[in-house]
Image (cartoon, rainbow, N blue to C red; front, side, top):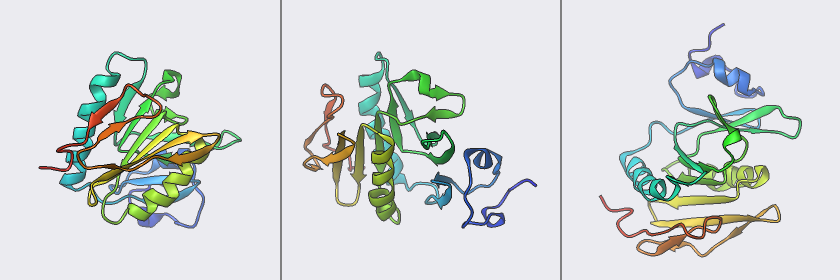
Length: 192
């Protein structure tokens, strides 16, 4: 049976990436440890503008490097210890340095850098659920962009746990931990 509406699914059931591939509905979803997580409706213009501005800062840095930059929608599949894929997320931006992880379905395994831009209604999800998820699966660096408060939190993975850095306030210089040569001013990041 073709699934064309999320209401056809039992949200208490555990699903796999194979199930995810069969769904044909308009809502954007992520799969977190087998559970369906509805994403916010299409991102607001401010979210898209910030994503585009960060992309414009990251693209030239990674352009001639072995790492590759991707932006949503782009599936990142995170297999569990047995290799089963119960988690599929769509980060706003991500950088993958191990190109063997990239295939025709997206990325299989943890990216090296993930950037998530908070939208109204997803702040708690991003800050709690995805923080733990990215930490567990070994995403080396995770940025959380708070557009309403105008700051960026940077977390770097050290000994399997995220270490938080001083928040990067509006107008300050952001410097990556994993890619120390990657730094840029956040001035005008939130201005439109």
